Image (cartoon, rainbow, N blue to C red):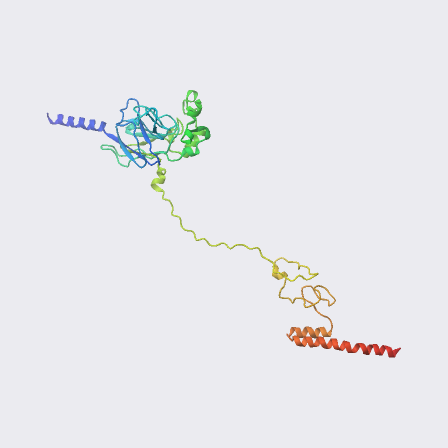
Length: 377
């Protein structure tokens, strides 16, 4: 064989190797319970090495796929052996095979689906996560950063796709299935053309988002919410990456890559003073005492001047002594003036002596006045 023949054989070998090149799907279970992934190849596409298996919590499994493969992946939940028949029966996503292998059977809705077409138009991979057939658990699809041998440099967006939200928790009552284990699509629940994009609604111009599909779309903007939701739901990637399919992802793609939970800074709590109502100081209740009128800007202590003398005898208010309210008692007469002067200087004995002298003088003067009146007769 000459040199040209050798070159031709090498080229044919390279072409054959490239056509048989596999993408790797890695299934990861982050759910609290065991799931049973199912795999369905599209018509005309080779079946993968497995069509279903058991995947315990925290486990992962890699499954190779040939170039140009297309099909869908999903997870069955709540699976158990039927006691009577021995068949495997699943609460959601059941493929009806009765075993872990689905063997060419698809998922019964409602089920969250990851859909792929590898090496499609323009050599791009096309992929999406679809809620068109309903929802049973969160699913996230992430292309790897690398590329398969012989692949071209990445030209697609290669963005993560999927739904990380718990739609079962927000599912409308009329769409709930399996006691809340899944959420049906409006098409599955009602079968009406406007929900199923069928009949007169079988085109993007007439089949529009509904209130039900918008519930899905708002919670999962990177997932298919109805049949013609292509513009925001189909993703592409070039270069032949591998794919990780995660069930029950802990966060959305952006949160996983960029968002770090902010540390909670301890807040120093300043004790808040307890507001106690201002209580009036108990005062001796004196008859005929009116409460002073309070002027703007005056406080309780301003209006009730505790610094002023308290009454020292008699009644407060306007009395025989001509006292002014709030200023204590002012006694009339010279003797009273002397008494007040002695009290002001602190001479209590002097004040008492002055009071006794005045009383004695009155006692002496009274008989003299009576004697004078008798003589005048």
